[in-house]
Length: 527
Image (tube, rainbow, N blue to C red):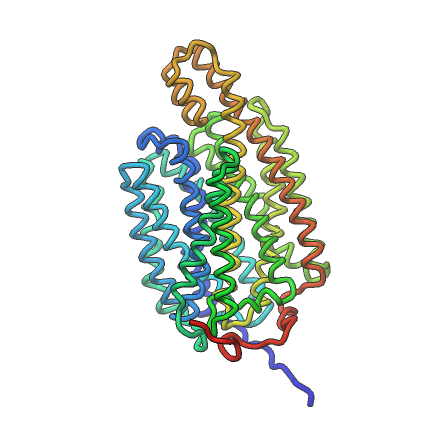
C-alpha cells in the first residue's frame, strides 16, 4: 500500500494574534536575564551586597529557571500549556513586586529565585504552544524566527529599559515594568491562545522533578565556585553529587511507564546535537554581555541611559540575521551555516581582545555586533531543528529541553566567564592600586569594579584617579581572557555542529533510530 500524507493545516489570523500575545512573557523573561546590568552600581550603593551576593543576584534567576524548565515543560504537557502559562504569569508578577521593594541583598536574591520559578513556567509554554499552533512547517519556521528575535531582543531591550528607568526612577522600577504586561497576558491569553495538553501523558512524577533539580543545582554550584576560587574537595564533591543524582534521574526515566522525559527523543537524528549547540551559543551570548555593558558604564563612564542606548547597536546591526539564515538554509546545508555562525562569533571575540580603556567606543560595538550576528544565526537554526524532531504531543518537554539548554548555557556563561573576569580583576588590580590605601579601602576596591568606583569617589582627586586607572585596566584584562574563553567555546560549537548536525533538516528526524515505542505504552512500569 502507498501511504499519503495530507498537508498540515495552516494557521489563520487568530493563531497569529495569539502568537503576538505569547511574545509578552517571552520578552519579559528574557529581559530579566539582563535587566540588572546597569542597575548594579545602584544596588551596590543601597543594598551593599558582597561580591558573592552580587554574583548570586545575577545567577540565581538563571539557575532556578534552568533547573525547573524540564519539570514545568512536563507539567504543562499534562495539565495544559496555556494553564501553566497563566499560572506563571501570576507568579512572575508577584515576584516582580517583591524584587522592586527588596530592602536587602538576601531579599533580592530570594525574589530573583521566585522570578526564576515563574519564568520556568512561561518559557516552555510559549515555545510548545508555537509548535502546536503552527503545524505547517513553513509557518512554524517563520514563527520560530520571530520567537528567536523576541528572545534575543528581550535580552537587548532589558538594559535599555533599565537605563531609561534608572535615569528617572529608583532601581526597583526595573522590576515593576513586568506587572502591567503580565496583567495584560492574563486578560488576553484565555481568549486568543488555545489550550493544548498530552492526553496520554500519565501522572506527573514529583520524584523525577526533585531529581532533575537535584542534578542541576549542585553541578552548577560546583562549577561556579571552582571557576571563581579554584578547586576544592567540597566543590568537586558538589559536582559529583549532582552527577550521581543525574544518573538516578536517567534511570527513573528509563524505567517508568510515563517518564518526565521520553529518552527516545535523544535517539532522533540531531536532537542532542542541537541542544548542545544551543547551549554553547547562549553560553557566549549571555555570559559576555555583562562585560560590554560594564565597560560602557564603568570604564567609559557613560550614564545608564547613554550606555543602554549604545548597547542597542549590536542588536540593531543583526536584526535581519535570523530571517536571512532561514532563507539560506533552504539552499545550504544547515550544519555548514551553523558552523559559519560560530566562526563569525570567534572573529567578534578576537576583536574584543583589542579593547582597552583608551580605545574608541566603535571597536567595542564592532566586536559585539560581529559575535551577536554569528550567534543569532546559530540560535535561529537550531531551535527549529529541535522542535521539528519532537512530535506535537511532546512539544512541552522538547521546548523545555531547548530552553533549559539556553538558560543553562546563559547561567554557565555568566558564572564561568564572569568568574574568569573577576579572578583576573582581583589579581591585576592589586598591583596597580596606589600605596598607602587603608586595608578596608583596598579590599573594597579589589572586590569588584563597582567597589573601586565607589572607593575612588571618596578619595582625593589624584588618588581617586589612580584607583580608577588601576581598576579599569584590570577589568579590561579580565575582559580579554573572558573573550578568549568564549572564542574557544565557539570553536567547540563549530566542530559539534559539523559532526552532529550533518544532514539534519527540520522534520527529518521523525523516525527514531530505534524501534519507536511510545512512552507509556510498552515500557516497563516502575513505582
